[in-house]
Amino acid sequence: MYKKIKNKNKLLYLTKTSNFSFEESVDLILSPELYWVRIFDIPLPNEKQVLSVVSTFFEDFIDVENYKYYIKKQEDNKYLCFAYDESQIIDLIKSAGLNLSQVGNIHFAQNEFKSFPENEFVSESSFKIDDSYYIYQDNILIKVPSSFISPLEVQTIDLELVSLSKYKISINYNSKYIDLKSIYILSVVFIFISAINFGKLYVSCNSINDITNEQAKIKEKYKMMPTIMQTISVLKTFEKTEKRQLNLRKELVKVFNSKKKNITKVSVKNYKVSYE
Image (cartoon, rainbow, N blue to C red; front, side, top):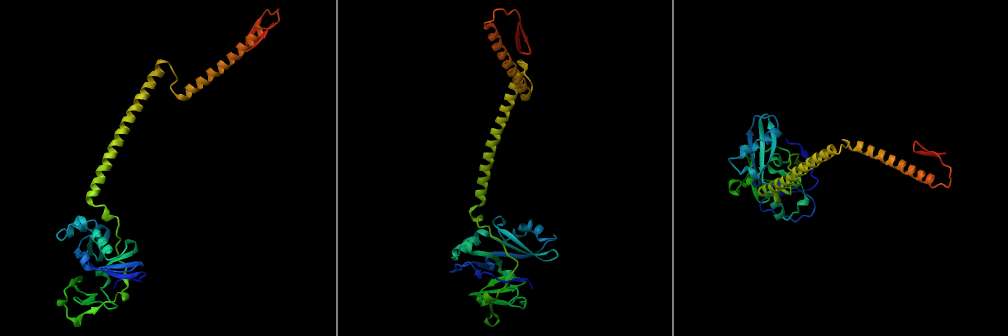
């Protein structure tokens, strides 16, 4: 028996013809007509590894590129595998009168009615939901015409009494608007923009190399320092020397313009002027 979870939201059963009028949050059970399910013997140890290869097992039934997949391990090397079309489910949610923001968890009918309310259904037992009839045949839930079912054997299921299992799927509500063609177009645009940026980067790198080479030639021609720090240090030394020389010139001008008539000797030491 599956582990059951207490329902927090209103529970609705979604079919191709559903029409609801609810504004509160809801959880959905998908009718068997909205997904494919098969039991496969796959010699892999866990659901994650099976998920990477399961599409190949559905190739005889569906266009696998348009489907997503859900895996439930039943026993060693035996898996219950689901394939579902997200775009179809999104369209049916909208056509049923629901907003996507209302929808919480989404479950497969296959997992939710296997036991109800407490006793396991025997193989090929039948039941009714709304006006549709269903039967577990070889452990797979299928929808059948009412003519196939004896009214005396039918059990009507009240969704209010159903406790959901932990097995659920998440729908990417943006997937409908990003189809395969759009992905190809976006990929081409991305590659084109990347190529332009790469070209600009290549040109910039070449320009930088040209500038660096030109700088090296100029430094070699004028015997300049190899690094900026050395150049700045030399420049500061020249500026300091220039400042001292300017001060010395001012002092000499003062001496030569002095009113003293008997100056016979002028001496300069360490940029300082003395006279006799």
